[in-house]
Length: 124
Image (cartoon, rainbow, N blue to C red):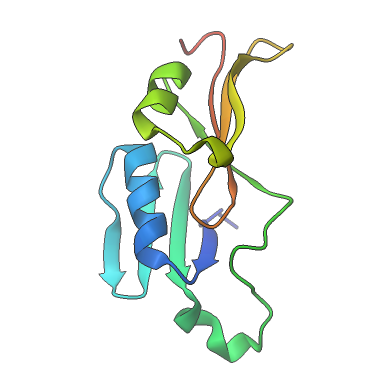
């Protein structure tokens, strides 16, 4: 078995795609109007419209996550955070050095999912 992706289901596909394009610095692949993905070393982040899951009878509800981080290792946490210019209400944790040495900033994407921008002591 190989890991394929994490998928976020949303009612605001274009808003989430725009946010993650800014976070990743890459343009999303858009194989269909209701689906986008960002592929990188080790993982794929997929974003899909709720139209792609209507046959699941409400098993997935957009903008309700309170248990999963979407994490990106970045070279410069402070610089990436500043470039995103998150609204005050979207900041969960300003750039901070964690007790274990990682530098981390937590922000919410347009659906409220928590995004961790981090660097390890050896990556900055």
